Image 1: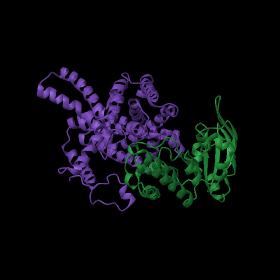
Image 2 (image 1 turned 180 degrees about the vertical axis):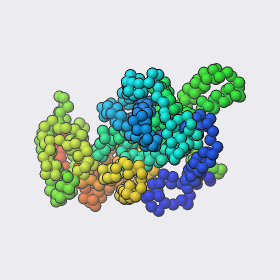
Image 3 (image 1 turned 90 degrees about the vertical axis):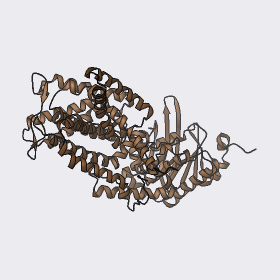
Image 4 (image 1 turned 60 degrees about the horizontal axis):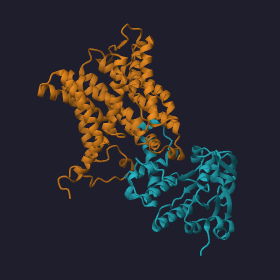
Length: 359
Length: 266
């Protein structure tokens, strides 16, 4: 009843191919955007900003990036942390070289730089597949972190090896640095995620996306119909790294403000969680990238609130429990629903079509 | 561009000339000194017992295998070997013996991949998805919808092909090849494992494609009644060697072919 598509006829191929073909989806999405852009900025405080919304947006961006590479093009990558570090350090270096450059341009440029690094580390993908490629990307992760630790030029020869963001403004409001108000950082990330999210969806539903999926599903057949494997795989690495680089840039400039590379972009801190996000959210699904990010960001907060505030455990014990439960849930989830939250949602939609009168 | 060259060849003239092709994998000789010609606009069948080198021959034609020696004259141009991308760009499409579809994608998307080579917009335009890209998508969608109509695939347009039954998957694969609007269509056992009705349907599709779109068809098939019915000319391979060539009635009388493959009715 709620989710009925009856009576919604498409008379052009353009409308049939739109992102939200159903009117219900369109309304729901527009409402969500309305709330996100016009209501949340007035109520956001620094807890919601730093603990929930900003991490959610940044992880969504990284998850979109990894989903393009792994979910759509089928190239498994464990190098997300490394690529995010490239984005962060690119932002830092551009900031030192061009003090007057607009922060939006800095962030986008960092993405472009990361894209080129991504192409470089994507080159082995022509020869190796699956687990072996995963190990090759793992090497890129360790190499990049090692490089940023060993070459002092990257952190401007600072004693601690830390990089620290300087204050940048947009329309007169600080979006980076300690004085940035929550609504400004939030809106800055939100705009990037929404715009680039649409760009990703558009690519996926047109030529380049179909080439990626063709390579993912059967590379031999793809070659026979004229999809060049190297070019297609490298384009996936480039565009995926662009998104991950921007996520890294935001992670550094907007979220943390100051960081040390080993600690912040470690494989356990970034690469695995982002991979879990797209697996739990749904491989090869845009919605899945967001659901996965929300799940991984919210679950620890939820567990902590329940255990510390409701049950009254000490913070340290709660932390231990949290990790255990997190891992357990992950395993249970993968066994029960290997196609992720996006699949659960489509099952729910199917049920809602008939509810409350299933035959 | 070879596509224009193929199109300029008049019907009935040779479009592919296979000249003394040999193919060996180490010590195994898959093809030995095979020569034949495919004429434009005909239905050309390659037959022979299992392991005769039929599929290898198709793989050589569309560049998947590199011949050890010999030449392929393609649209009047001598080539030592083909390259898959070049073959696709020159208007050669093919289907596989064991279905090679994109299992995670819907029927519609599978057919749309057949149009990839003809889509010209770059990825930045695709990311923005306005005017020209939208028009291009709609144009190719229209072409694909014609193939869907032709092959009766309307009901499974949105179904992921991995969950379709075998016969339909074969049909979708033919559809993907037809969506490329090929000049030459290589079909590797399009009717294997089908029942009589499905074979009749498939034969009808193949003949219509040949008749209406003037597609040259090179086909491998084991069902002799189908082969003798629909093909204009036949070449017979056995142990990688050519043992016969001609139209169906000549093949049926050919002593070597009867001994090696067809056998005699009691």
